[in-house]
Picture 1: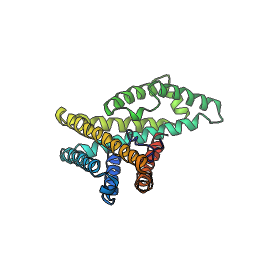
Picture 2: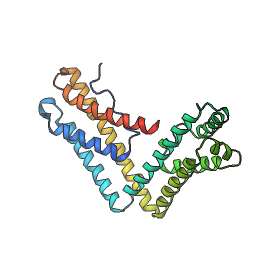
Picture 3: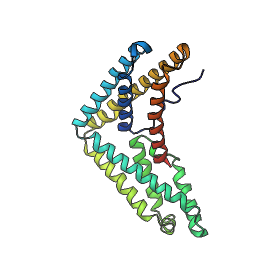
Picture 4: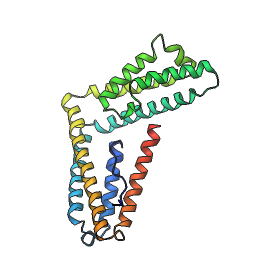
Length: 235
């Protein structure tokens, strides 16, 4: 059957972007006649799940960790994305020495995966440490210099070190709280969002799309905006 809500995939969205979209969706629900749409129960469950996620984030912020970790991780991801973008461009450089150097560096990067910034935070840290060691090795340093990527490699190393230092400054208990609690509640929220959208799609199929189309369109727009943001970050 045709789905009014086309996608619910927000797995790669940053936590705060995800949380913002869930709040926007809840605001959409509050403006609807939920009883007429037969969405009262699932909307109530959605609100309750969102409240739990919000509480987890609130408690995490009190430790002084979440926002600074998220900011450091975002800066690191953006730096890697910028490095990759410049590197890709240099593979087309008309000078063969430079373009072949860029291709060789690309091979090293892709050895660790094509989307390093999607890895779990600690795994990403370890991968970047190994990648940077490769790029600073005797074999690849001349290639980095030839492609003009020295500043990018240095910035990538700096942002990765800053994230790692911030992470290790905290106690193991605090770190587990951030990675464990907020991750669990985010996963629960994602499942609840999928359930909400599946319910809307099911009632639209059974009762006709007319009454559900406006709500679905607004949700589709928000999801589309976030997915476009993710694509820009990962280019």
